[in-house]
Amino acid sequence: MIDHYRNLFNRQQWFEDGLCWTVVQPLDEEITVDDLLRRLNGGRDPEERTMAYPKEESFTEDLPVLFVYEGEGAWGFLEFSYGFAPPDHILTELSKESRVWMTTWHFNGGYMILYAADGKIRARMRDFIFAEHAIQEGDPCILADFRAMLDSLDPDDHRGKRSAAFAFIEASTGMGLESEWLDVEEAPVVILDNWNAM
Image 1 (cartoon, rainbow, N blue to C red):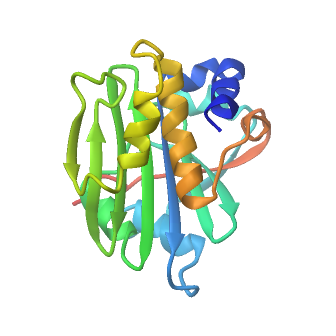
Image 2 (cartoon, helix red, strand yellow):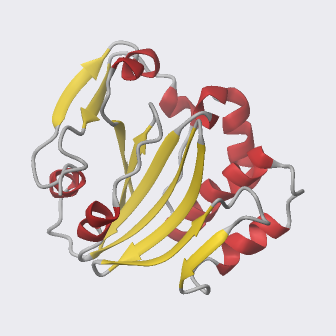
Image 3 (cartoon, rainbow, N blue to C red):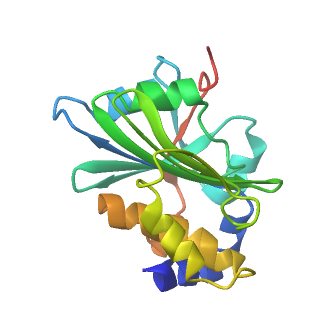
């Protein structure tokens, strides 16, 4: 699975500059994707738009731009312009009656993986790409398999470590990401305009 994502990053090298991948598994079948998007947008409906060339156009926005993907019992939200990550209060809201997995990074670093459930952040690892600087918070058992993936890689294999974050989330949720999903034109996107509201 790590090799699958390593190949994705080989094909989509821009991806390594900044993204936030959030997978939500609602535990209540009444929770819809619109409910989740409202939570991600601080309680308001986000803007929906079609972008002719999403990879290029998203950089003209100063706000998070998302692709939305549906999986089996899960929803994936890919912020692909700058690596905007939802603040903790949004993630805890998102995790009410749901399980939330997220990984993110941006051009200044910010490598993080996180798990939230029942309205609380249960585990987080910051700076996971640098083993000597990684900071783990919460229940260490939750991210134990991810730590094992990292330990199996060469310390300088940064692409492999990014790939491991996606592989771990897919192994945990069944929700993956395919390279061809990113090569789209005239694609629907969601723009969060209230995502960091308190």
